[in-house]
Image 1 (cartoon, rainbow over the protein chains, first blue to last red):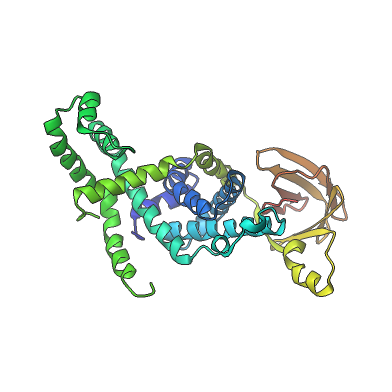
Image 2 (image 1 turned 180 degrees about the vertical axis):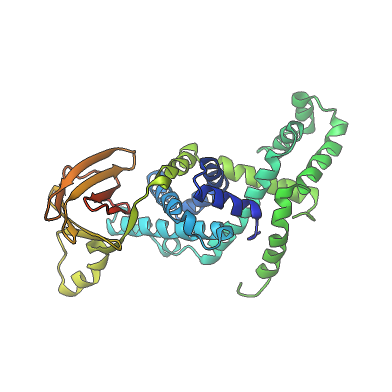
Length: 201
Length: 150
């Protein structure tokens, strides 16, 4: 996963001045930055502040990232640091009062590490999903919606015979499984599982 | 993930799509807009001193608090010393030299002010949202500070 050539290419192109590549990086990892902000329970104003700083720092660092593939880790660490800065400043101004407790100030490194792994996996899944044919995207969207749609509703909306929904679901998921995006993730995922199994890891 | 069964894969997909939906579009837009800074060909000056941060220990020792906020940004060729007293922001370039100072706000606004021959400048009014300063001197030095808020 750390060697995802697509991410390396995006970082390289963005550092060479390609706005589309930059936009794709933001689309891909914006969720990671945002999720970490919510871990620190920041309000929208502070989230915007942190977001601005993180992306601006990344713009400045683009050409200097020694290991472009380690971008998610860099983003997560930088976001956590910026969040801490905002929380500390807020605490100084006593705006947070008693709400500021240790659990906010010290978001565990393990939590951040987990967010990075989830973000990588989610990004790969979204890329793979976007590459599916429209009928698969429609069907899978309805299947994962909250609350879930019944087969009867799916039949009513998409016109697929109820008896075909199961087989089509299987075929669409198989396409997702075989996508390049998940293949790029594949190797890293094995490593995560091994590392996650170590005591104290 | 390739050996995950259908149910597990579908659940993971649901989670991935939901996580993305939870992110407000303004947040993503902010990130994309930040790229406007990519082409800036200035040398970045690092924050090397911040009275808020660095005087904390001293203030505790002396049991007094500093009433002046002072910042120093340093690059290889130029330092900018900033000081806020009351409603004005005063600055000094080191080594002293004349030039032009741009004040960039987050919203994209730019205003300019002159730096006199002994390297002094003032910013008035002080922007109430984060801003950064870009300083170009007559000898071609071009320096950009990080974001500051007062």
